[in-house]
Length: 325
Image (cartoon, rainbow, N blue to C red; front, side):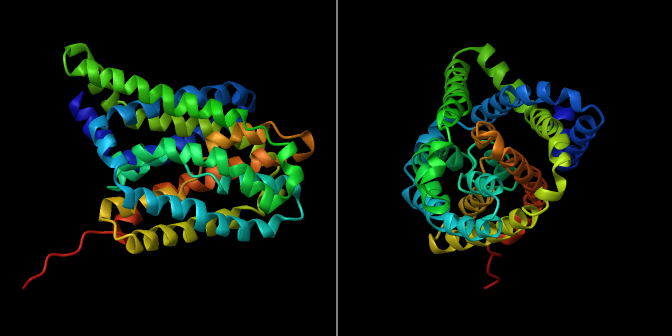
């Protein structure tokens, strides 16, 4: 078992690429399974986040929540600077209300789930991101209507239902975090808790593979059906990743953060909450049916970007070389 887990860890990036390819193949060859796969996204994410939260001692989370400099840097980057970038990029699709809403919904909301996993793979401060996740979620619930009002007009608030955001907060943060806290408490006294923690730690890579496969498989056919229209947003999402990485690196430098914290901020600014805002986009009127596909397109671009950033970010933000003097 240990040798298998080590093999998974060593080859995880290749395995993630394989999972994306398998999901795409299944979704394109058998598009009728898309609804079943879509229903699997939430349970897969909950298990992945449970395993992620379980791997971070909650005492570290408590300590990380007191890191005002890190939290302040990340909040300014995500809710002051990134919204300006999102507004600028959204001007390129302002003529299409569906695309405009899809782009704004996804770019204005920082990720609170698999960003922790990818940042950890790149040596980022996972405990600090975990501590920040509830705060990020609450702030985007409060600020998203404000940003949409400013960037898309007051009428948009009549068609956006914030209910799925509340549901996502409960299912993707409260439930797995509470379950992880219970298992960690049990593990301090009983072997059963330690066994669960060990199993879930070994399952991290397969859970990420399953999550990637079901997300891609559930949406790839729908994206393909509107490919011509959606090609307009692909360059915008690529540009966003490039700009967000630069913002995160600069924010880490200005905030005088250490290397793991800077890597965490880079991933936080570059990774968006697409899986959480997708239900909001799906709840829009039929006349804006392209909005959820614009959200999913961002997910596809982002997953490829994350695989690249796992290798690239450690080069962009690395420990200083020891002085020879």
